[in-house]
Image 1 (cartoon, rainbow, N blue to C red):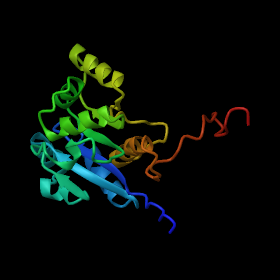
Image 2 (cartoon, one colour):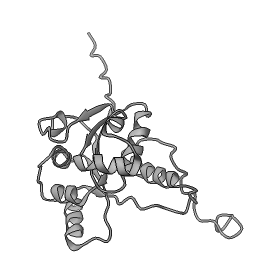
Image 3 (cartoon, rainbow, N blue to C red):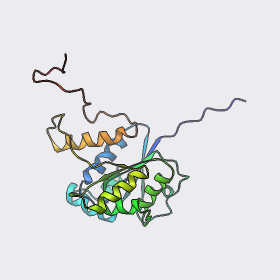
Image 4 (cartoon, rainbow, N blue to C red):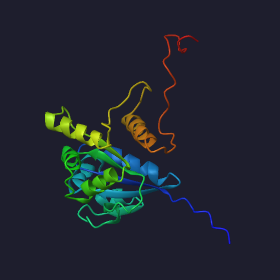
Amino acid sequence: MPDRPRQRRATRLIIAITGATGAVYGVRLLQHLRDTEGVETHLVVSDSAVLTLHQETGLSRRDVEAMAHVVHKVRDVGAAIASGSFQSDGMIVAPCSMKTLASVAHGLSDNLIARAADVVLKERRRLVLMVRETPFNLAHLRNMTAVTEMGGIIFPPLPSFYHHPQSIAEMVDHTVGRVIDLFGIEHALAPRWGGLKDASGDAPGA
């Protein structure tokens, strides 16, 4: 009897929201991925993030958790995503506080966010930290270097202006789209770069 073809599982992404400013990035990620076919999101929200979400977006923990496919509690270090045997395609921390960055850089798995990030790194999966702080001090820079050396991607959510955004929402979508690109997920959140144009509007050399 011939073997049945194995059905490909959904793309699984762990999304964490911490207490740094920029909660809208995590919210927009969840909104977009919820409506993306073949993607399954596993969400962890820190206690500090609940305060920032309310302050910056007016959303409650329940509102945000309703956007994810699966929700895990930040203190549940025995959750499925705390194990390397849990198959995921990576993790995005959006936004990532300096405390969470430090915990990841030093392997301090003191909550589920830090533990899940540690697992993603040790399993050689993709970890993206949308770090939010300015200016950076030396500890911040060294921690970012350490995470980069371990294979993580440091992705400060810095807005781009070459696509002439007309609103904050457009700037957020452009950044979220660039993050999603790192996981090979198709989207239409923002226009693609089409090359420089001269004063006439034509590409140079045209």
